Figure 1 (cartoon, rainbow, N blue to C red):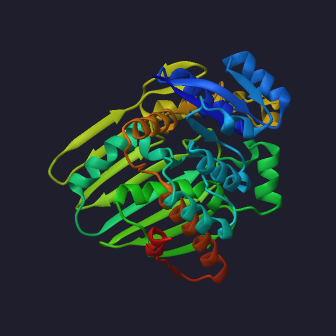
Figure 2: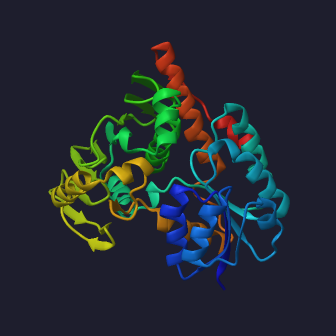
Length: 369
């Protein structure tokens, strides 16, 4: 039986990722869209033909046919949605980060820890095909001192104006907006949580963040928005046990093992609706060509999903995994604790930048809330 989904918050990210991914999955039915913009709702209705559209989220929570809610509102309106989901027994997927306020984190953890509903935070990268292949290879070669280097540097001037203004002018932190993704990914890869963080850089954007983990593992995240979208945004390099594992932009995986193992794998990506599978070098050329073709209208909208080089970061797979956990009554692997740890790490990273000193961390209390 298909799982009927209700979407709350249908802006650019949901419209560019979650809604089309759910529409492409034969296991889902798009039951309802809820957003504050009636014009946008009508556009979505004309494209996807859901059961109904509404500006009233209570209608979705009162609908007995809707089993699961996908929430992509702004982070300052996640807690009210979580409360409603628990009250009505709806399973809930919430985009990252959990929230903007440290005061809300513990309440969110208590709320979901005491609930029977399934809950997932939208940290998609562990569900990408490349990372699904990388983790078991890392586990195979991992031994002794391990260094993980993660580069995630984009181009801020291509953001939607409201997001650009919030980060550049109002100094909202990309460590919370974006780097929570990478905190979660490295925690997932290592099966650990960090105990110390140190941040150097510009504060709200363009930083180098060092995480210390148990078992002699150190992660360095080079995060920024002063690059060009014509160059691949993300790269991971893992050095362990005299072996090297790399992943470039979710397109190419390489392993150089101490035992002579040599692996290269490439992964599908899309460009203007066409599916491609190439080396990272060719994917980079495609990204450069796309960057040069961006129109002034696209820049004004800050919306590029239809034409850009779109790599598989796991957005489709994460929703399908969530569906499987619900159907099989299994625990979510990206639950409220994982979301809280990522958020709290972000705030401690900001604290470290402010103090210009490392900050110690301990998340063991979260399970007891």
